[in-house]
Image 1 (cartoon, rainbow, N blue to C red):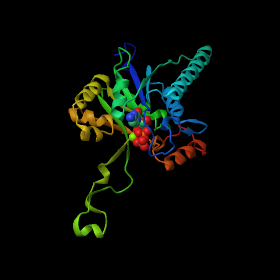
Image 2: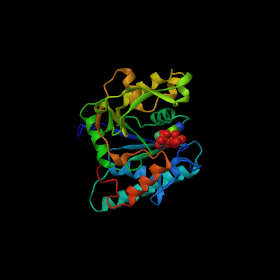
Image 3: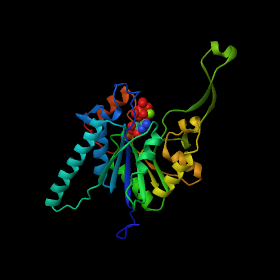
Image 4: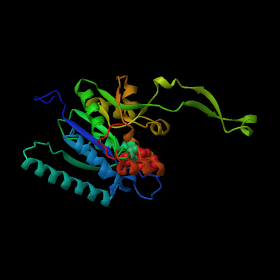
Length: 272
Ligand code: CTP
Ligand code: MG
């Protein structure tokens, strides 16, 4: 622990190495334009504005020079802001920015970033670049929970739709409809999970090491880091997320994100 406070030395991993298939722009999603910048620039600015990170470690697609350059521009931007703050007497910490090549899956990208964290790092937040408009307050809630002793904490929002389980219809039923409902989940106990997800670093490293032995099917089923920690039997805590933290996945999500930036309440600083 940092001797000045209970705040652990914290890194934020930003995973931005995906290809953005569902968005369909024909380029990695991190590069897709959003509000006059790119999705990754917005995501990085959000992380910097939250001020919780001593290190920001970004995973980008291997060999992507444009995204490498974009990260370098971001470093220049935060350095300039830091100089400005220093002259006005505001002591704001300047995070170290590290860029790594991501892997073929999100989990592999996280593992590449975990391998590049600075010695002495005690806690890590793993954040999707695709959640580019996540409010600062969400980072703070996650960081506070870690400082209070959580080994794992995720931001969540209530599920508004009724959620059912289904199976593919076979036999005669196939002529009626492609799927058959097998049950209805109890909505009051369901939560939609967002990022940044926060972890004690040692716990997340252990969880990813355990996942090293997964077969292809098991590996494909891993959609977040908290799942891996749950498999260790470590309690995962939940704090309130925000609707602005939507994961930009489809063209409709991009329209919503543009609207959030342009509308009267259009900044990340407005809580949902
Ligand atoms: N991600 C990553 N490395 C991968 C796959 C995904 O770093 N090999 C990151 C994405 O860049 C994104 C986050 O994980 O910020 C969530 O993934 P998703 O929304 O699925 O993004 P993509 O994989 O890029 O999109 P798609 O699945 O539509 O191709
Ligand atoms: Mg994906």
